[in-house]
Length: 340
Image (tube, rainbow, N blue to C red; front, side, top):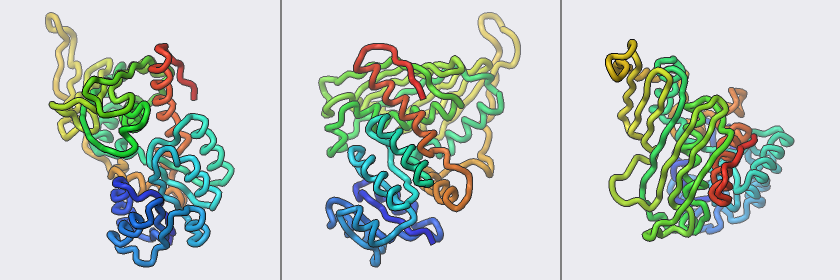
């Protein structure tokens, strides 16, 4: 039985509790939140009558001596929370972003390595079935080599709370999902970025609700991102809308269930090359899907001797570096090289 403490009982925690209770031999033995009444309410909601409730993580860790820490705190508390869990001998699964700065992220990688524990991050979008199917299509060579990826993300959520006060809110809190998915689909890491942020007149965010970025990948591919969190009307999916261009064809995805691809079939027919529809491969038994549940399952499997999670800190750092590269570029107005 793997014993877990969960810290941070805000709205996002519900998905974590639901995922955890579907996995055999995982027991939440402690629930922590600055507001103990909120922690008690979550524990009651999920029938955790014997869990230790508290607002001091160190005390609950010492009392319960868990194997795992599920970290769902606000980004500003992430480094201290993960550090406490690793120090207590826990494997740690964190909400994104991995850290508030790259230096803090590097430090968490160091602490996890020294503790001999796994620290992974919930990048649940790469565990979507549609993402896996697109990646399978690209890997088949059906559209040739990926030459560019293009994403649009336009929504207008009124979250309230910390997000509306965050600087670089779109890049730091949301765009990392899209950046991580682009890195996964391209099978590559970004090497440079040029980005811009702005605040529309109707914005209810403090800073950085609207942004655009152009990334360069090491293999020569280019990834463009356009987004806003204060764009009312004609909403995109939370997963963005995508166009992936290859040397022999293209894939488009509406961010929901509509994935379409066409590939070149022969030479030019007048002005254009002849193309034909390409079937999107089905999921394979080896595909790792399930959103939050998929990430948690991979994490649990890893600590039981399975393969390293795809979103382990050393890998997720590459996606976080894209975020901070974009932020640096937006602040400086310059193209920024991304070093891993």
